[in-house]
Length: 344
Image (cartoon, rainbow, N blue to C red; front, side, top):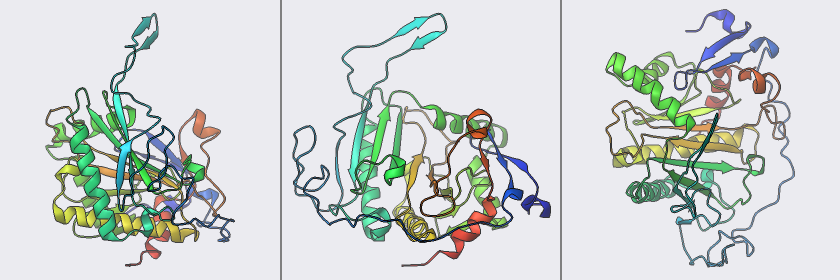
């Protein structure tokens, strides 16, 4: 258990996945201040929007027309950040300056044909169908030449830069392992070499025992606020069994993963009584053909709202020039989220 003075004394906490630190200053707010819970004015969405380029049957920006799909639907992003065969192979090195080519593919996965739903509105069965589609996409992308990393992520809400409210996520498959998962892979690898066990399995066991930051658990997965959380209501979804990537989930684990996603997205929507914005992403083992016994897949949720439905936490000042900082402790945030758990 944490020392009693941890709720009033500033201290730093280490992120075991990246090796980085976060400054925690609980004395700045002696209790979690949720502020007013009045929802902002929001446009009520229709189940079908004629101008939406993701809705069934509609014309997309590149001139293609969506099929009249029902359920999940996938396609290659019309404005991909990565290209399978770049027109030119950029390679540059002059003194301290360096640039190398990067190839890849960007896919879009619509969760539903319904324009007005979010992940929390879907049933557990529908979320499980989305997970099956993500597995199919990963299976396909991992066989493409030169692909070594697959990043699945979702930006929900206007303040997270989401330009289209139709429920969807993205998959970026690329040639190199990018910075964040590379740091996490290094930490997990070092821990595995030293202890012959994987880092996150040991971490999950400790969090289940302590219960201070645990939000929810089922047979296969836990939802917790990480000890080193930076965002106000940041959470991790972690399988209890070491699973390297989503393709290695059993049927029961996929069902429990869908349950965990239903629970956490529902909790978020109840914090301020609005569709809660967030960025979420799955970190998993590289698809480079090598064995990665150190890798334990997990899913990050980074929701930005701090005190109300309209007050956002910004990474500015000290956090831009020094290191991340938070006032509300991970333990306080976990307690708030635990109170909002309901089985539906």
